[in-house]
Length: 171
Image (cartoon, one colour):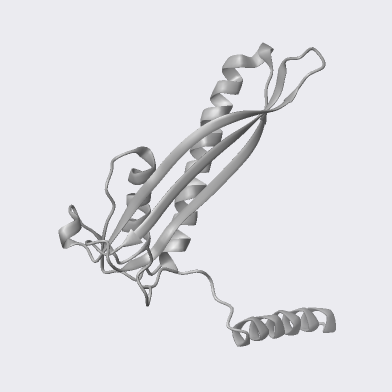
């Protein structure tokens, strides 16, 4: 037999489900890029991961040359650097900031029509440092850069999904 408490919980869950459906909420589906074909030149780790994400998460077909592509994603820069954030009382480095900067743009194969003007994304991570744990900190730094690369790929994918042809060519 249903108790009032059990009935009220079921009713509350039902009301929440109806409200979520009514407001248009839905889980994120497959990323739909606005291009049928895309060319991404290069073969560095960022490009390889980006190509894998485009192939897995969209219906956009990757092509081997710019002539076959509707759009070309070109990288203007990819820089990794490390700056000192703080020193200890003894004058030794105690904290670094890792930076990963990527610039890119999306055009048609001739570079006339611009889908995305040059965009620069900067990701940063702070990491503590200790002379007593040099190998561990090097491993941590490598893991943080790999994590930043994955974040960068996701940010580029979000920008690609939002790409639209410019009404006026952007120089």
